[in-house]
Length: 329
Image (cartoon, rainbow, N blue to C red):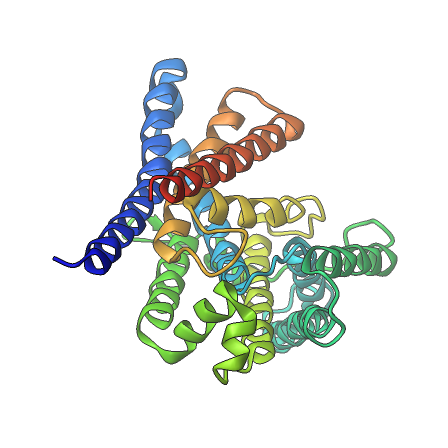
């Protein structure tokens, strides 16, 4: 065996080891949390809690798939919660509880979401604004518009015809989880089996090389932001259907949740690494953590602290694993 062949095989082995490590860490974390929750809070495995875990997984998962597409293109979307909040307001005010006006309201919400996604893409791709700054500015802008529109109070009413989307169940499983599962499968197939997926990975891994190879990286990045916005609209519909009213606070944590789920699962913040399977694992872990924190009586601040710590730990472990793998060669 030649030295070059041996080196290539060693490099391949390191990549596979890193991929296994990236998957095993969140799975181990999920198993550990489930065991600790069973010991510390025996009532955690009640039917009501398990249904809440499944609902949280569905709601977070829908937005996390969109966030994953943005992250793979070396971006970040902090406007997810604002899009969800705007969706609930549009549905409530434009339908005002009338099921007959619901299709138009949903169409308007979708157009509003696409407009926000287009603004994000335009700022990042055309103006070169850093994704964090661009999407956070859009988040603040949209939240301000929502507050000005509603004057900080609930407005309109959510049609009861929408409720099955949020609180319905099929075969005992909440509808949002079925939606997440379907979206995750479609996204996984696109990323693994299509040229669009290959272009996204290439863009995130090395934008300059991707451009030199003929990939229109701007369009790839823009598509990620548009997809993220549309999925945030769907999550907003689910949220509105579940709550049955406009709740501005309900969607504000989804920015962090969607990002946390993807990163905890193993999707790289630096782009080009990770897949939907990682996000699914991260979603499961985060949903269990959130419901467990609620069971322990932790407030919103405590939940945010735990989520932030989980993101930091996942990022540190991944970076350490990458360094160790690189240093062993």
